Length: 124
Image (tube, rainbow, N blue to C red; front, side, top):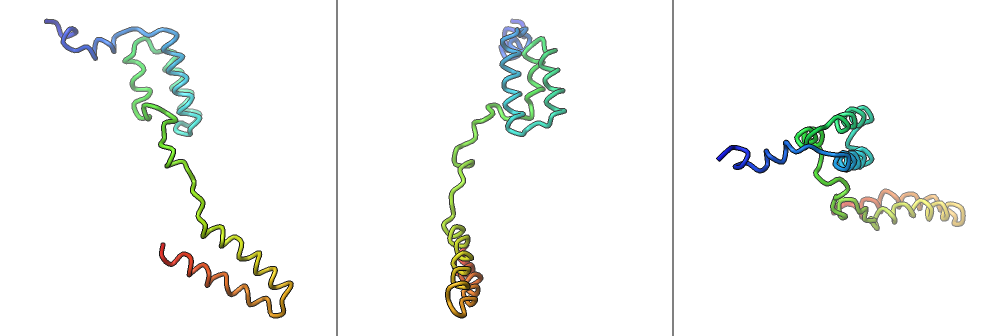
């Protein structure tokens, strides 16, 4: 039995690629670039390597240090949850300003800002 019959992976690497495979590789590289994984110089260099690729093995080093499927980040890692404490802390200065303008000795309301911050964030 020859080595090519025993190892189908190495056989696939020697298969020549066509325009469709190069376009698919370029689309994947563009996605990686748009997600910020490559700087413009790296993108340009790798784009040239894709254009010059003849076999599937030529494409492997281009993507070796990149995730297999760009854009497939779990939604939870992208999702920004709103912290109700931050919203409260953002509103406190507005309330303190209102007290300063409308109430005698309203400037004392500004003392609530650090105290409220300590109370809200002490358990974090």
